[in-house]
Image (cartoon, rainbow over all chains, first blue to last red; front, top):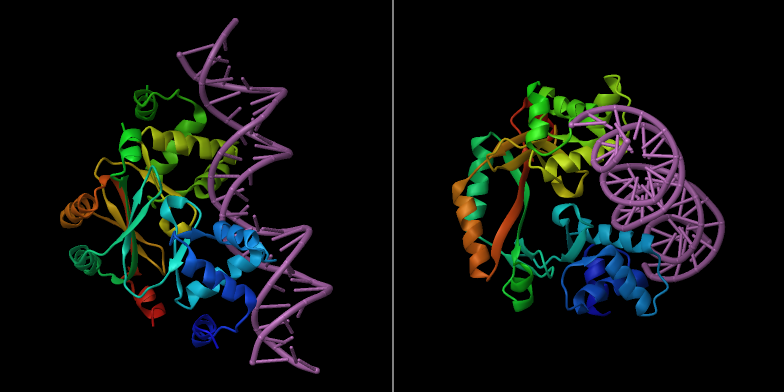
Amino acid sequence: MNTQAHILKSNGLKVTLPRLKVLEIFEHSPHSHLSADEVYRKLVDGGSDIGIATVYRILMQFADAGMLRKSSFDGDRAVFELEHGHHHDHLVCVHCGKVVEFFNPLIEEQQNLVAQSHGFKLLEHTMALYGVCDSADCKNKAK
Amino acid sequence: MNTQAHILKSNGLKVTLPRLKVLEIFEHSPHSHLSADEVYRKLVDGGSDIGIATVYRILMQFADAGMLRKSSFDGDRAVFELEHGHHHDHLVCVHCGKVVEFFNPLIEEQQNLVAQSHGFKLLEHTMALYGVCDSADCKNKAK
DNA sequence: TTTGATGCAAATGTTTTGCATTGCA
DNA sequence: TGCAATGCAAAACATTTGCATCAAA
């Protein structure tokens, strides 16, 4: 059995063609953050006979299983990325959409302290920084 | 002229009944964070003959004018709150929906450093912490 | 009076669901 | 074979838009 089939099984999911295809899309995509529609288009373009509903169902199952992480930047459509184990937050360029992942232990520590000081038990958080990246194109548009 | 009419004018908005009513809702609501639908229902319940489209239009105008702040917690419907001048982020109870505002200068500072270190010019950010608040009810449900 | 604001209904975009059919184990 | 997974279409949901009417300056 190949690796991808193994990944599905070890996450308690039956091995089916659509699930393998979706997994493949994420493993081969040059952009790590994909919306449901982008995944769907890539599959259709690749010749798959798949429905958008199935894409949504699979993305949710993968997210529930911990294989994908779902984020919704600022009320936009949701995007999914492979969960590679290390927690991180996002830095997004408002012009070109480029996404950089980062992890800052000082912020994480402060978040816990903030929650504690208000009597909360912290479960999770979302944090996205929006700015202008250092590409010439984006710096120009910013003016 | 009353205060609310004055607020509208000073923000460059014509004084109309629907706008006064929406402003009133926010100033009198025990919960500071309201969705468009919640505002709409309060208005209809209060006897106003208003359309949901108008509510959305007014909320957006108020947000553009800096009178309201719009947040979308984790892909949910957007919520609005009165902008009282001080920047803050949110701590949300996943059980009862209680929202606490906080400001942490250390986090703000680190966010700027993170953006800088990746060549970004930081414009804004969203951050929400999700946890369980210290009410007996919520602590029970959490188990 | 004149332009902008409103209410209604219809359109939009994203995501979910019902149900008959298909395909893994 | 049996039950879960799928495709399709329709529904659901939040939000936006077109347009005729209404109201504030």
